[in-house]
Length: 265
Ligand SMILES: NC(=O)c1ccc[n+]([C@@H]2O[C@H](COP(=O)([O-])OP(=O)(O)OC[C@H]3O[C@@H](n4cnc5c(N)ncnc54)[C@H](OP(=O)(O)O)[C@@H]3O)[C@@H](O)[C@H]2O)c1
Image 1 (cartoon, protein in one colour):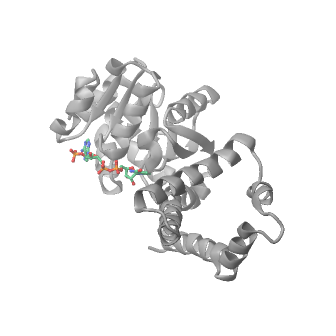
Image 2 (spheres, helix red, strand yellow):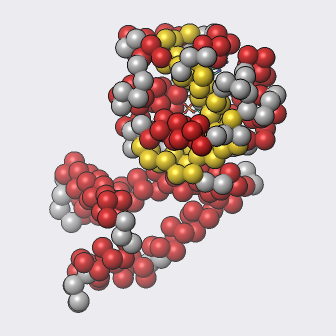
């Protein structure tokens, strides 16, 4: 069995993962196979030397690691087709499909193989995702290997599968919450004098800087907030007004509303 990686479903996410693997030089293009039915949409990957095909069975036969990146309604049919060529001894199966549980994936695969569920977010396309991972039947070396795949497109965290819905809300929906926060900053910035383009740059770079402060130092947000809140100053006046208007409360309620929706669609 070769060390090739097969991405079954070269759409937005599947392609982004393949591109992340290439950009980080995790592997060589000829060791990545990407499949989809509309092959002309994979021409850019093909031009980079990636193997592109519509033959899922052949892709799985050639590879050791299978990344399943199709829509949830395609999973059962595709895994059932792949089952005869999936080997519990040789293959690692990684599903990035939202809402399909490990138990269902194992059942469709038809064997107790090393299986991972991964939840990245759309920042995967610029190698800045957070990817939550759960797994069964995986050895420590298989876990380290899969983690290193997703480290090529951002950061990874291992979670219990029962937290996968919560991970979807905080990590995947979280991109939209953060963007809406930035949009509101832009609107406020225009009202206090900036043109839209300058306000967008200041708002986005400021949020990026705030996030990096936490990621790089490991500090709590309130420690960094203390540094910019001068007694009787403008920052604390603005922050307290936001809280009076329900800022933190509305965010927490939004997160729990998304969670309730994911549990009972
Ligand atoms: N986008 C994200 O950031 C994100 C984040 C977390 C999780 N997810 C999950 O990841 C999965 C993929 O999302 P996406 O946004 O990448 O969707 P997408 O762009 O629609 O990609 C799915 C791909 O699967 C291909 N496909 C369908 N049937 C196939 C088959 N029989 N054999 C091979 N390929 C087949 C489709 O191409 P053809 O029609 O040409 O075959 C399509 O390119 C979803 O389950 C989604 O919930 C996505």
